[in-house]
Amino acid sequence: MQITTIEAIEILGTVSFAISGSFAAMQRRLDPFGVLIIAFVTSIGGGTVRDLLLGDTPVAWMRDVNYCLLILLTSIATIFFKTYIKKFKITLFLFDSLGLGLFTILGIEKGIVFGLSPGICIALGTITGCFGGVIRDTLLNTIPLIFRKEVYATACIMGGILYFALLYFNLKPDLAKIAVIAFIFALRIIVVRYKLTLPRFG
Image (cartoon, rainbow, N blue to C red):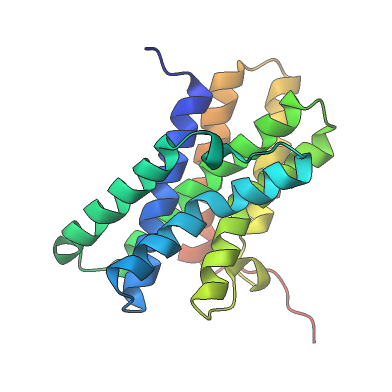
């Protein structure tokens, strides 16, 4: 069976966020069940909020149990390999950044399928990319990244604008998707590496 680009992105995004959720939970020394729960909400949180806003119910993970199995297997593998990974924080950051780019594209594409305007599609992409992390951080009693000075949601918005710009200039959609995922991933690394932040108020 041939996998489409969107299906591949969804699988990679689910795995990336499951890994980032698992590492975030292990950093807080949760038990295996807690790790699984955090991995699950990180992976499906943004997509669930998006689908509810669109009225596309039952939401995606309830229609296809394979996503739940994928999260379960990824979490187990992450727990197993944790002894080989010394720097949890770096691993969490890299997979979270990759998942952010992948899920932003998924949200944008879902909006396009529903015939929504580019602005709303970008908003849906931002929700899909960010809200799993918001739920994860809230459950772990941490201020979500989206509410801090670090560039996070802004990366999704900039990636969304770039995506529609590339389509406007007739770049093939699959290439545009890859370019935007790489852009968001690279932007997150650059802003963290050079400590670039948004201004604070107050």
